[in-house]
Length: 132
Image 1 (cartoon, rainbow, N blue to C red):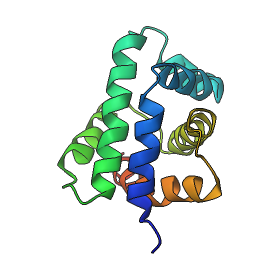
Image 2 (image 1 turned 135 degrees about the vertical axis):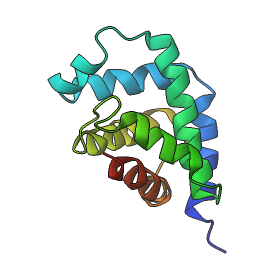
Image 3 (image 1 turned 45 degrees about the vertical axis):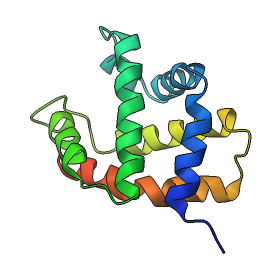
């Protein structure tokens, strides 16, 4: 029996969360993806930001496992043009930075893991992006 993408992602994320360096490495990758993205974090408390990231990814994972989209809708609103002004094109950079960081930190990462991440959290990311 093939394991559901959301189960694979839940387990993969659990392995990544075992090391706080995962979140540091994510932001290093994400901020190096674009000068515009780097500028977003100039005056940011990165310890707090990493905590928010941990929770945000978990919300995406839980949504893929059937949780209501209430928290993702709130994230979409806070990241929209009425909030932080996160440009829609930056979400693909965010997702690629996440995949690359999971690849580095999940010892069981393979092509199926990557495909599962994209399948499981893609709809949640689109929900957030769509609020722009």
